Length: 178
Picture 1 (cartoon, rainbow, N blue to C red):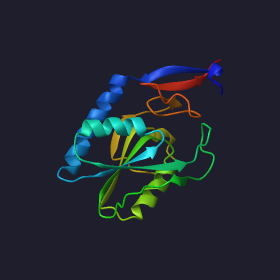
Picture 2: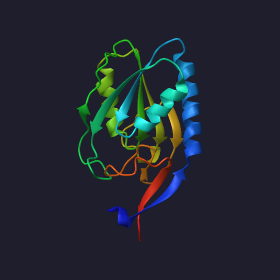
Picture 3: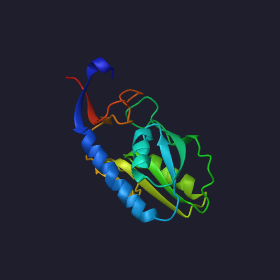
Picture 4: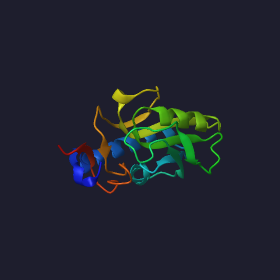
């Protein structure tokens, strides 16, 4: 799909995203009070969500990033998940929150949870801005859900298609032009 053959329809406004981030930050603050969690952002899509979440949390946190490779430049998974870039912090005995832009089929997140659980964190939770349960192939528990979404191929607010559209401030559905 080239940009000339694509069209965007806003699904989730900047305001609705901001409200979801505020709510998730309040839930996380409540759950980790008195502790300093490690937030692990899943690159590349979660970078905007994680930055906003950290600002709104307003509490001490430690940050790290991990990159999982499955999609390549396609709109559907093309291979089994692999770790393309791993975390550097020691998370043994720590409260870990994985910050994900979107949980779709669940296969990447399922793989990631097993990978991080092997490092013996005190707790391991998932915060996702978008949860598309209708496409789930692997059961994964998302502890902090920003916005449930039934369908649509989405871009914006860090979420891309072939490295495009991350810059959009809202989340839009990407469709082929008829």
